[in-house]
Length: 310
Image (cartoon, rainbow, N blue to C red; front, side, top):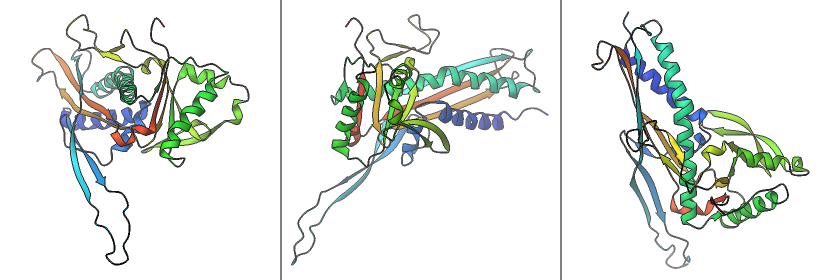
């Protein structure tokens, strides 16, 4: 029986979206997008609520009238990325197409897409924090100074947003290794469940704040996202910018970053339909972006290393 390519497209898309949420170290940020409206394409609508502060109560006239404004602001998903792949018909028949295509798309997303999305998100957080002067620059962590610096930056956030705000520490893997060498560090560390939607994992905590380890290649202040067609960028993918600095860690409120990741197009064309080759054609298109509302930037702090040459 011929493969129903429309049905397979739905299955692939659902599977890839789930893999994205599980595999990305920043996948938990997508759970903050529950109130964001997405109807396809490159635009989302995000609710903005404005309210007034308290006023005096008058025993004769009662309450002062307040105003509540609820509106939706449009945001563009600036990251519009894609690739197409061919699986030769002589190598893949209908009986093993599903397994072969699934392996190709899964490996592509695991090794290329997920690292790129992570890298973009962390560099975007750095950009937003730097714009608000909420970055510690040129800091070199060591076993003797890392705890004091962490405590200082956590206190800076909590002094503004309060102790009740749930925080997360996103830490580069080499820096996490330094943290583990601190004398008597075990009395500061524990293990907890970190839940992101339907995904539940165990992570270590520092003074009850979850620590999420991230490969250092994804923790840079700036990247070049290759277009895949010009300027020697045919390979596509991403690379750290020449003047990028290492991000040691990010301390952020769990509810602050709002991330969207949509596998907007997964298309499958059978060899008889593909006009360019006698091959199965797989098209993959990804829209994604990250925002932090202005009011929540006080709940963000980034610690970064020295710039190249310093």
